[in-house]
Length: 391
Image (cartoon, rainbow, N blue to C red; front, side):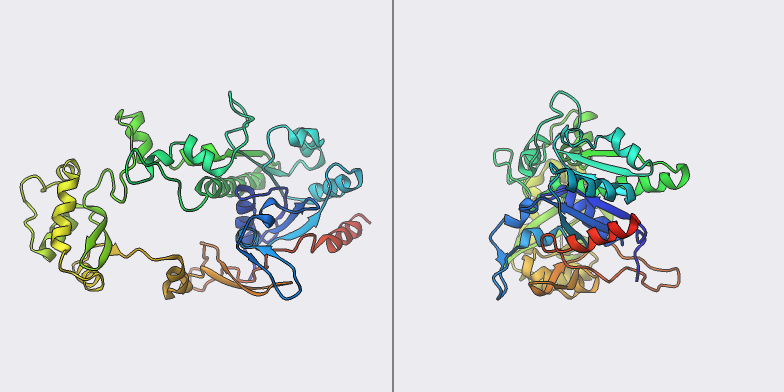
């Protein structure tokens, strides 16, 4: 089955994670993505261990494999006139170009926005930087953990304000890629009306600030500076990770009706003085945690989760990564895809998070996923295609 972007050609000049994640999302939607790499390849081909090494001695980084499915690879030296001409031909035929160079690099290559528009007025350009394209720090290089700290996300993550922690995944990179792909789809939609492309810009900083959500308005409107609160919600209680007899479970008591049900399930008085409303419980967070954990003290986690489900309380356990991929629910949602890699053989990859359905309930999600490419694995066929198209 074809995806909704089946007629879109994407030229991918990106490396590392933010840009490759954006182009992978477009590829998951059916776009043809041509990944342009240097002779040494995307930086992430060398990021490891872990690496996967088949019998023939070839080696691929699992990091690279995570962000480059549904792409073709061609090696081009953009400082070489002949190779730059190949890229120019690709641009002239493309619908989208994605780059995450530092500000000014595209201009030095002779491919600034005005030149790209001359080559292809319908081209949509996505440009991702670390801290933005302009402003007092617009040319600053960006890496995910630096952006996590500078954007305030690390100050909100950890056991306490004195213990800032980064996310377990490169969240700023991933969010910038997601926002970038979202912007590309919007620009393609507008192009359908106007016939002209445009430039979409985002950054690691912009993406991180874009998900501040209530922590942002907590400051801009209420004047409160959010701080790390560990595994408990700063505005809802009880909401978080609570200890029980043999471990811990998570609960989300997000309304007063849920609080009443929770109290019914565990023999508590919902009108207990100091705990009757969510603001009271938030103000007395530590006491609320003690109250809940006392109620859970004699319960084993498996029995406790059943009890919570019986009373309709949203709850769950903390799964390890291997448990997530072994979980039937994960598999049922198409979140693992099997591909046949040229050198590595059969691979299971984390799958795309979107599914599509016709009104009658028939799933129309594209399922023919391509494996991440070997370096320059499609160079010859792409050059041949361009030569044929030029005749």
